[in-house]
Image (cartoon, rainbow, N blue to C red; front, side):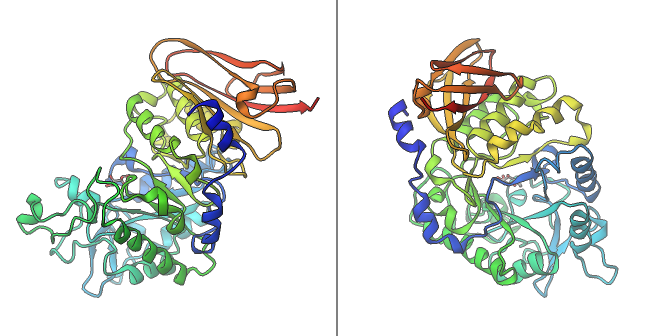
Amino acid sequence: MGALAALAVLGTHPASSMANERAETVSGTAPTPPMGFNPYNAFAVDVTEDQMMAIARKLVDSGLAEKGYRYVNIDDGWWIKREANGRLEVNTKAFPSADLGNGETSFLPFVTGLHSMGLKAGLYTDIGRNACSQAWRADDPNLPVGTVAEREIGSMDHQASDMRQIFGDWNFDFIKIDACGVADFEPDKANVKDGQFRSFGPWMVRGRNPSPDDAKIERLYATLNSDIAKVRPKRDYVLSICNWGEANVAAWGKHDGNMWRTSGDINASWNSMLANFDSAAANPGAAGPNHWNDPDMLEIGNGEFDANHLVEARAQISMWAIISAPLLIGSDITKWPQSLFDVAGNRDVIAIDQDVAGRQGVIVSKTNEAEILVKTLALSDTRAVALINRGSKPISLSVMLSQLGLPSNVKATVRNLWSGQENPLDGGAISASLAPHETALFRVTVNTRP
Ligand code: GLA
């Protein structure tokens, strides 16, 4: 996007009026992007109560919870089967507190434990009959067991009763709803042919976007949203759509959920992070309070974003912050050195992500190596600016005040949100010399208008 196009978007929010017309249909519990923890990037689907509680305690003890990281979300891997009466049964080997001792299972003790720590609790399901782990991790020891019907732990055909169980009986606050059940169980799949799973559709083919079946996908999410609302009429929940940017979700996600994935799964490599960032950064008009583009979880602490790669770790959270992305940590924080807590816990950076205006930053300029984004903050005449070195060579970048939608003859204060240095700016430009993969994140505040 050129500077002029960026300026046109800065002050306005093209999609917000449309979203407002149907605003009463989505929960109002995510006025700023949700923050917390999801275990998938750390533990895949082999998640246990011990791990989740250790993470929860660390969120509290490290101060991350107080800084906003409150959602503790279980991902795929929690279920053992669907009972004949339709109820979902929890894997009590992994989650012992769910064993009520009378043949019944319940997450209520786990959820209540998190609530008593001042945290929120999230769970995971699928819009189809089966989950992603069943499609992609056939050899995992932690998959549902039993007959074909017992292993149909996805929400399809059980929407109302599953949402009653999860949001009524179990009192969860957040749900991530995946979509492999409608994408990965087509008739010619080996595990469908050999009778392990019932065939389905597919209604979603990755990359075939838009497709004639998109409305059916939206309907499945809309049904779950309204079924949750029946149990929780105050709409005190967050619904996270996970269909990887398919089915034209950017057009309807805001009506049926609070955030929607814009791409496939992130992994802990620089290039994967960039690709996921780009998928969300491309569509700033879709985001706003209670409805966010979701480029997937933070990889801080993992692989190319671990404690030996603090430049990259800082870059990812800076980039997520400038585009108002949900901040869900996906790494085992019980093993983190202080340096990683300092990255994830930088209050100034979190404040950019959580700015109450909820205006996703827009791209001012972009090449393969260099990218500049600007975000208009709630406080008048205040901007956040990210200067991003996407490449592997040092570069220098600069941006003019006029490119931020500010008059070039004003006096401003520029705060570098990583070094904490504050400098006066008398007109002119904001510049930075950037190491490979470095992002500089600034807050620019106009002091006085001429
Ligand atoms: C999909 C999702 C991931 C994760 C896994 C779990 O791949 O996109 O975020 O939930 O399923 O199996």
